[in-house]
Length: 145
Image (cartoon, rainbow, N blue to C red; front, side, top):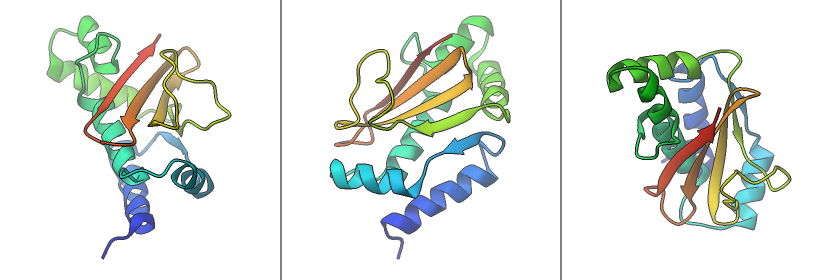
């Protein structure tokens, strides 16, 4: 049986071995526990993390999403996703769980209602994945460059 913590560990192993293997992950068990205690919800960390990664890599619904911005530069969605994989899988990329002490994302989303992850491609290209704490299917991303 997979419990909450072993499920989170499984996500981290997939992260380290798979899609984002070169990126730096800045998430601590302490912060996960702190947020899960302070903001109880039906969406545990590992589900939110999975939804965030899927949003970053597949969601082009918003004009400000990472994939949408790449699709403006590259002709096809398929080629844009390949370029996105390269950008995300760069050793300079940082994926973070946003904390209460961090500034809110530009649109003002709050960690009390959402799991918030930042994807920092460099100091000028920061994107946010917002995952509702009440429903992991409600996930989107946007950013600025």
